[in-house]
Each structure stands twice: as structure tokens, then as C-alpha cells.
Image (cartoon, rainbow, N blue to C red; front, side, top):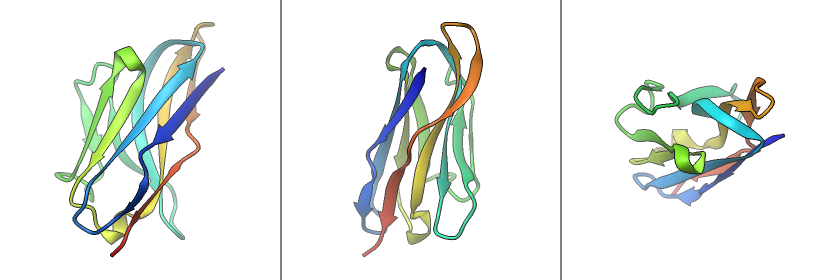
Amino acid sequence: QVQLQESGGGLVQPGGSLRLSCAASGSIFSIRRMGWYRQGPGNQRELVAVITNSGGSTNYADSVKGRFTISRDNAKNTVYLQMNSLKPEDTAVYYCNADVTSLSLNTNSYWGQGTQVTVSS
């Protein structure tokens, strides 16, 4: 079994910064693509940013380009999302997602439980 645990959410004023972390644990052989998604009030879940297993390639939603940075530490099985210049419209529950190959060599997509980010003055 594989678990993803997010941390780092909270309340921040517009223009502020937060750093989200997501650590994977369990029966892990390797982790492929990792990413962050978010779901705001009344909205569908949307992609925020993704990163390849080597960290050599990233992709961002247009709404966060230039403000958010995704990175990963493969030694710690952890992905990060540095969020700068936060706006009220960034308010959402942020979810971590990872494509994990387990020790049984099966590959599945896993989700964290979500962490709330609220941008408000």
C-alpha cells in the first residue's frame, strides 16, 4: 500500500507565500510523474503543476505560471509546491498525485487527502 501525506497549507494574505509538501510512503519501488491539483469552491479539480520522475520537465497551469514552482526530492519521495504572489483565486483544497510503481511492480495513481489553502485579507 502507498500513502501520500500533504502538509503546508493554511491562511495567507494576498501577495504572500506558502510551501506545500507531499511525502509518499509505503511499498514503493519507484515514483514516476508527481503533481499538484486543486479544487476551489464550486469548481472541478484542476491541474496546477506536474513534474517528471527526473525533475527535468515541468508543466504548469497558465494561471500559476511565474508564481508557483514544483520540485521534488527523490531521496525523500517528496514533491513540493512553492507558491508565491498568492491571489484570492488560488484559494482551494490542494491535492498531491503520484504515479507509483509498488514493490510488486504494479503502477497506480495515488492521491493525498488534500490540504486547504486560503488566500484572504
